[in-house]
Image (cartoon, rainbow, N blue to C red; front, side):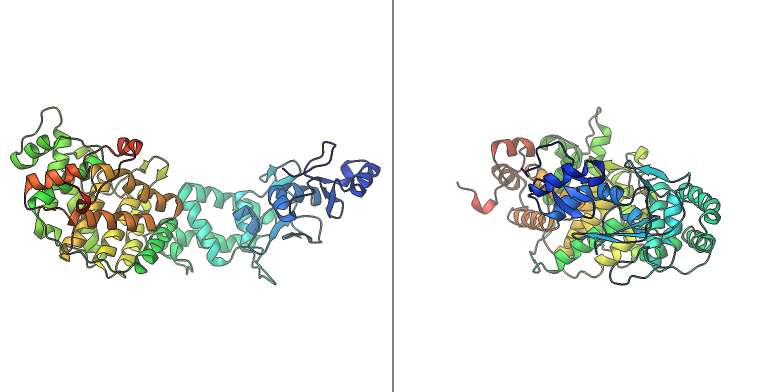
Length: 493
């Protein structure tokens, strides 16, 4: 723990807040240290930048009371890459403390719409933030005070995406009233046209990819595109993996069985056989039975599984058609239709309905650049899973699209045994939550290797191998007992 002075002082404080004699003695005794004119810290051991990071806003209000956080800082709510904090203040002089530089600028006093922040600061209102970021600015030796035109487009696009058109139009009305009060009428006119272009009510020129896509009717989720780009890079640096394989009725059966088990549709093997091969539908579980039967109908159709998309229209047609078959027995899940409401799994909120088509389109353009069937399969599965374009059945459709890439190339398809479910889900979460891509590639590589080691020509042989390799163990129970999926080549006896 860092050492502090014996009296109860804040980590950062102004000498004006305490008797000058007391500050003098504490400083002389080495119990406090000076970090700027009139500014001290009671933390005498830790490095200055760590202290600044924790006390950034406190330092700002001590040195620039009543300042308004605005421009780039109000958007990013952190120190700029060059160490700058940008504020509106009646003080003109910049102050540098360690790696932090506070850069004030004269401007309008706090308005009624600006919000109190900390005890002696203000946060610019959303309308003011946009107007002041629309003021042309250039960086002299670092980052510009305001956003670039391209950055402002992205910022406005994100407001529309996150809060909707009504929200941006409300802010636009507030800007119209505020602009004359802070002398930014020209900036309002510029932003007004920019918003209209994003909303497709004005024909203007845009600079950002997200802005252009929105104006063309294909807005997309920029964060997801970053994830897809990272996965692409991971796959591009992965050595081509070629494992030849052939499809079979038995493999299709277990593929359908495991794919549905992942999503919570649980039957015994005997029950699943009755459903798939004899069309015996349990009276008490008709919808679940349809799920496994329809999955099997798609993936056992070799002609269907050899279809892969050559264009974005092909991609969407395949996606819609397969989903319509998959969820044909669940009319409440809108088979073959893009979702109309947002969906989520745990803490992951998937792509919003209005961004689905645009995000799939951008993702498909990345997919087209891949050449290896395995890489295309991995990417396709994650693209569908991460966008989650339908009300239900997204995981199964993603795995169907994945295996179609492999079957069409004569390569080994991939199954995800029950015991391997947690590995698979964890690998997906690693990308969704933390943009870590390698686990998914390694997980599916192992699953494909495992699948290719099983004899799928004989049902009983396949069932015996799956059992011996622990494929049917509950993934949570297996984890508790320290058990893992075993490659068939490592079975003893």
